[in-house]
Length: 340
Image 1 (cartoon, rainbow, N blue to C red):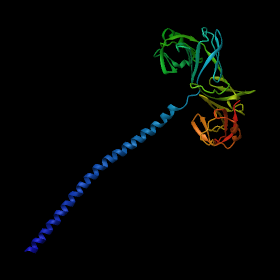
Image 2 (image 1 turned 60 degrees about the vertical axis):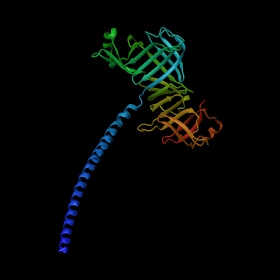
Image 3 (image 1 turned 120 degrees about the horizontal axis):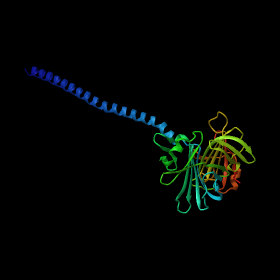
Image 4 (image 1 turned 90 degrees about the horizontal axis):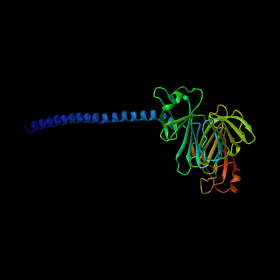
């Protein structure tokens, strides 16, 4: 009897154990499913995030793509007659001319030229107070909207729109093939329609000019004496060999970049994306205490290089002395020379 009871008890225990295992398995499946769902959602979220980020990358790159031509340069007036102003800037001479304005320019005025793509801005300010006296903006006729009766264009403060006001008729009928120059006052009102031209020479690399910026792309149109005549969307810009450029050829594509006290001039061969020659001009700066490497300022940022060529000239120069470093297509230093 006791043996039978034991057997029955064992069977009951086995069935109970089986039931427990089934229940555990069911719970396990439930837990596994509940983990899988967030994991899948997280995966989808991660994938969505990657997709969003990857789709945003071209937009970011497009926003940081440098605008060319692009200029910001200020100058002091060294000579003026009604309708013509001559200025001395940190990079060379700048002249402004107009048949309809520039009649009240004084030696106490500060003039700044901005170029942003197809838009040119000339600001004339009182040097002491900084008060804006005149602002002339030159742009294309497509900036005028007949629908909204506004003029939309780039300014140093960003994109802005201005009501056409009393000049609506003249602005809407402007010849679309000719540049349009308007005067805009500090309150945002259009004060007049003018003509305005400028001529810029890049004769040197400045020692220090914190707000100076130049980016020009063009083609070498002519070589004369120590000057390169560069054909750009702005017209012909004269570039002196004192900026470091050498051995340019007519028809060759050329880029001029100046920022602060540093300059980079690139010469390209037809069909090659990388410059065949790059001339970097600025103060001699060592990247390491042992003076084995140089710090070079380029449009892409700072880089340290260990020169293999032109090292002998460095031994006689103090740090901070203006130099030009010539690089080949691979980015290797082929020459170092002092700027005269």
